Amino acid sequence: MPDFLAAYAAAHPDKPAVIDDRPDGACFTQSYAELNEQVNRLANVLLGFGIAPRDRVVWCGKNSPGVVTISHAARKIGATAVPLNYRFSVEEAAYVVDNCDARLAWVDAEYGPLFEGLRPACPQLEEVLLFDGPSDGAGQSAAKLLEAASTSEPAEPGVEAQSMIYTSGTTGHPKGAVREGSGDPQQIAEIIGLIGYRPDDVYLTTGPLYHSGPGGFMAMAFGLGQTVVLQRRFEPEDWLRLVQKYSVSSTFSAPTPIRMVCNLPDELRLRFDVRTLRVMIANAAPWSFALKQRYVECFPPESLWEVYGSTELGIDTILEPADQLRKPGSCGKPAPRVELALFDDEGQRVAKAHTPGELFVRSKSVLLTYHKAHDRYEADTRDDYHTVGDVAYFDEEGFYYICDRKKDMIISGGMNIYPAEIEAALEQHPQILEAAVFGVPSEEWGESVHAVVVRKAGGKVETDEVIEHARAHLAGYKTPRSVSFAEALPKTGSGKILKRTLREPYWEGHERRVG
Image (cartoon, rainbow, N blue to C red; front, side, top):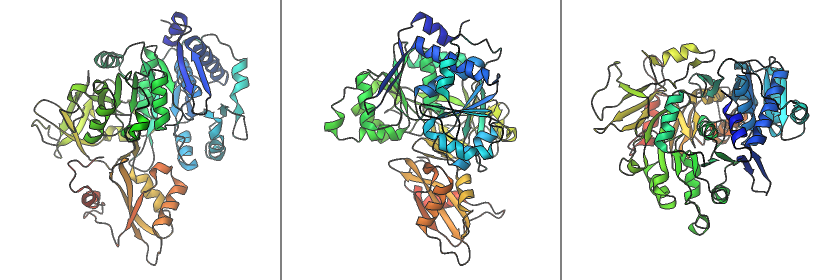
């Protein structure tokens, strides 16, 4: 069978595939024929550099046609495209590039300095190709290579491309979650049918495409031959402009961007017509009931869907529009072709409603392994069920509710943050003995990062210095927003820090212990 992008290019050559409309007035539209041609050029460039099936190619950049192009080009030749968070520090980025064994990087020229800084730590990285800007010491310009490249379809790779997305790690380093393709095709087809996606939908990116949610739903949009509108960087008024201008009918969003839209002054927000929005997928972090109530006041109520899932486990539950206000706090019922199971601390299956247990998932969309960390994959496996450490319960109607996390992960503004890497960075400070990091409630972000710090004897480090030290070593969104100091951290007899004891005062009065 022909590649689906090539098939759409042949059947609907003039249909807009990608629209990059920026607030400064710059606007770029690419038809399906033009997108397929550019994808083929890049695929042939990659082949010219010796990229073979299952080789890893890192890409880094804000939402742009260049990012769309690499995702399709890698897929066509069976290579594994590895997204890199452009907000990472040099240290964080170097770890991912080195750990995934990338031989080539496709980089927005804006982030050339990041790659110039990390290359000494990544000796296996042979080429850095810079797009959307001039080349510099970090790599060579992609423009001339693409201009000279063939537009012919690359040969079939013989294997399906894998995906690899790095998730924050419980041990201080991210882990590359490896999946065959983009998940179970039958499950995806049933989800498409349930939600009611159509080929004439217009999908707007709400959030960075290096995140599995926005990127995954964009891939679904292209799979149906839809038009994709790119917002390079989220800004609430500009988001409304794009919804109105292009009659956007579909998107995916973490709670923070939509909260920002809904909190705009009414006189500003009501200038824009949003009645075309048919499907809003709420995910990446729990949407509060108050935010859902506000959303259905501002947007078509029948558009609001919620899914629960993860980079590792795919889409696991779905809450339909009719149940959004009827089931406060629920993330829905199991998604098509997904089996859920709850286990208590003794490893027994939970069979009683309203009884919390660790949530395990079985489906064909679950990851294959963690790259170079299969032991972590096995540790999260029970029989052929897998977990990311969330605690949940179900009610009498079979609706699930996420109520806590067994692991320490924080979700702030839709971004997954693991305290271990923040604690490791803080403890590099010469005046810090140890630190405990956890999430505290935040109306704006769901959760914000808080650090409890124990100074070394004689240490005089204060809040501002702690935060600045973290900022120097970590991406900004991982930097603690608040800091408190303690003489010692509460611990078990075996020396494990009692995070729950530290978190409890901040979450008192909240029904659940997640943002």
